[in-house]
Image (cartoon, rainbow, N blue to C red):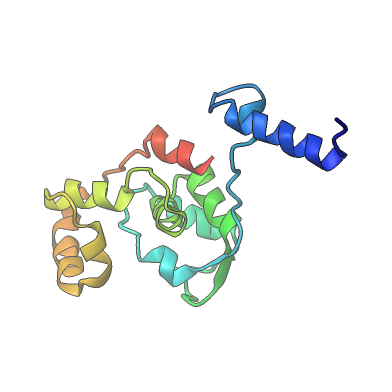
Length: 164
């Protein structure tokens, strides 16, 4: 029996994939690789900003050459930023908003920094989805935020691992 090259490679590929999922060896090479492509509007990115990252968001904006004359938010909310640059903002600077916009865009299983910050300030779980669209909740956060003005919420290793 003689098999063509295509049949051999197909059979070999099937054998590797059917061999089970392991963390090393040929089966690991078959795992899908996430591509960080596309663009994110600055306004979408900043929807997740709470100000509990110790100035990381502003450092990221400066590094990307994005003007923020008020010292907090970008001057041009409609500016498009490459996804890889937003990812860099999260990994290199610890920008919580960047981590969360990527978490939602790519369906990452990492903890929500927005949710953690809202729990810290407001004492309630599960507010992150509502916060994005509820002006009353956003105002409530602003009213309680002053007590935490100097607080920096550390980014968990699980968030960094999801973005790596």
